[in-house]
Length: 321
Ligand SMILES: [Zn+2]
Ligand SMILES: [Zn+2]
Ligand SMILES: [Zn+2]
Image (cartoon, rainbow, N blue to C red; front, side, top):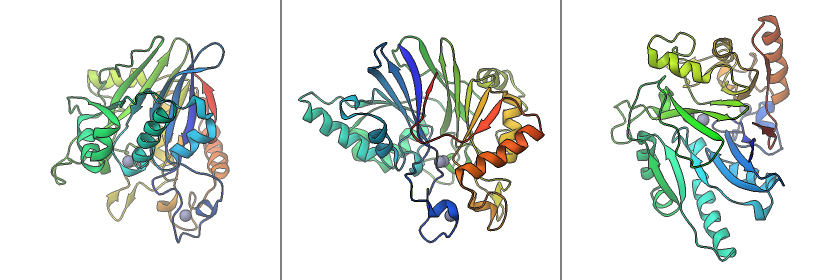
C-alpha cells in the first residue's frame, strides 16, 4: 500500500465573513475548513483505504473535486475536536455516504469514528441524528492533560500508525455537560508510515508551552513523537495577536508557530487555519491572501534560520507520506 495525504481545506473557522471587506474574504475561489484525507493506494493507484480528519465546511465539496464518484469511501473519521468548523458537514458526509451505498446496492456501515471522550459528548449532543445513524463512534475513555500520547487509533491497516497527542485548545476545552467546567477534549495526530512522519497540529492555543519546554516525562515523549516530521501542518491563526480584549483566540499566532517549529524541527511546515482578522485592519496578517502569508512567513523563516521550509498548502494537493 502506498500512503498519501490530501489537503481538503486549510481555512479558518468562518472561512469568509459576510460583511468583511478584506481581500481574503473577497476571494471567489473555493475554500474549506481545515481537513486532510489520508489515503492508502494500491500499486495501480486504486484507493483501498481512506481516513478523513475533520469535516468542517467545504470539505465534502473538496472530496468531490478531488476524487471520482467511484472512489467515494470513508473508512475512518477522526476528529481533532468538536468545534463547528471541524464538524459542520457531518450531516452532508454521513447522508451522502448512505445514499452512495444505496446507489451501489451495498449495505451502509456506519463510519468508525475516533475522538476524545469530551468531544464525543459534544458531537452526540450537537449532531445526535448523525452520531447515531451515520457514525460508529469510538470515543476514548480518558481525559489526559495536554502533552500526553494517547493510544494509537485502532485502524486495522498495515504499514501506517496514527497516534493522537492531547493538546489544549481553550475554546474547545469545555465540558458538554457544564459550560463552566473545563475538560480536555482536543487532540492532534502523528501519522507514521515506513518512510515518513507527518504531524497534524491544528487548533491549539499558545498555552501548549510543553511543546517548546516539556517538563514531564509524558511531555518529553509527546514532543519526541512530534519532532523531526517530514511534514508539520501547523495552526497559524494570526500574524501576531493571540489575545483580544483579554481573551485568548484559542489559536497560535505566527510568532508562537515559529517557536513551536523551532522546537519540533520539521522538514517542511505547512501553515493552516490562517485568518488574520484578529490582527486588525491595516496590520500585518489582516486580509492577507495565501500567497502573502507564504511570502511573509518565508521571509522570517529565512531571517531566523528556522528548520526546513515553510509554505501554505494548495487546496486538493496530494503529498506522498
Ligand atoms: Zn478550527
Ligand atoms: Zn475578512
Ligand atoms: Zn477549534
